[in-house]
Image (cartoon, rainbow over the protein chains, first blue to last red):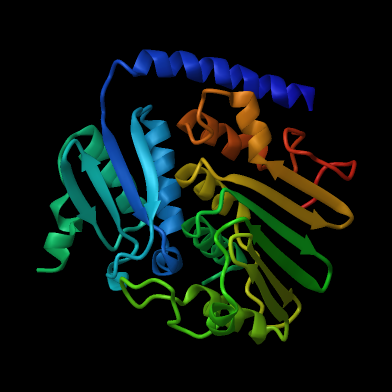
Length: 123
Length: 189
């Protein structure tokens, strides 16, 4: 038990240091994942895990990942919104692989993946 | 829902939307059954609502007709000839109990509860979760409040902490003891 608490305390110290360093950068990004019954049964959880994993792998900071309930478009689940600054893009029919691509392209490279967006799918 | 861990995620989301700040998830496994209990301190339900809660498309939301989460769980429990019970008190909270007969051919698997917990901690870090899993006379307990106390100003859903939780904390068969780990020897999956 002591070992684990010591590990966690160490992570706290390291994370604090990183937070202080990274707070100077400003990614200002929010990802809102649909986690109503429809989203969960369609596969929102693996998509969320993929997002978290990719965000960690890329060392991204200042990214807030939150949930929302059913937004009334169950047929398009799993879906999530990406807010960068004041701009919102809704990605639909997502998979873990597509979710990773969104993190890389949209958040890192600042390029919206049009073919996954609600505007493109609902044409 | 493909497995019980998905139902847990869905039910806990209901608790969160009912403004719960504390949620306890208990899983007890025997050779024949999987028992699930979810308790919250959310706003609770009236007797009238409770009577209709297993009806598909019944909802207290007035924005759109959803309301399939509990009926789907009820159906999956019924498929295994198990039992289902909800108890709720206004402004006190709700307790949901579901018992699956796991040897029944229609019983869905337990699934990846670890991923469900991580998802919950990630998206709703302010809620305090207690997760208890009992199996073969051993029990594992994860209390996020304890972890938050150690982390202090570092949020529990910080990506570094989540990654640590993922790698170390919820590996039942590893030698970690940050939760109140009871039952002596290591968890055997």
